[in-house]
Image (cartoon, rainbow, N blue to C red):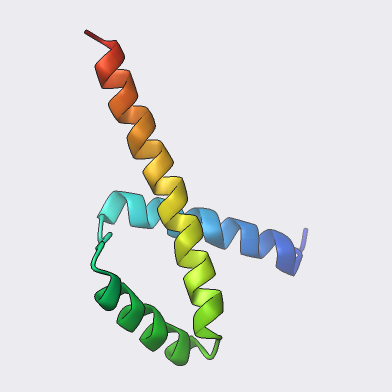
Length: 77
């Protein structure tokens, strides 16, 4: 079975999200994030705006998971 480009992209997003969550590496300094995303986009040959949208997705998903974990800790009282 050959993966479609769309499915390969979906899998890549899941792998990257998992790696980001396991390895940490989430910095919340806006200037630092902007610099890293811009440099990464240049290296990969994509638009910085595309890199920013992807990072925004990852950060939102990770944030939701952290909040859910914190809520479960609060509910354990």
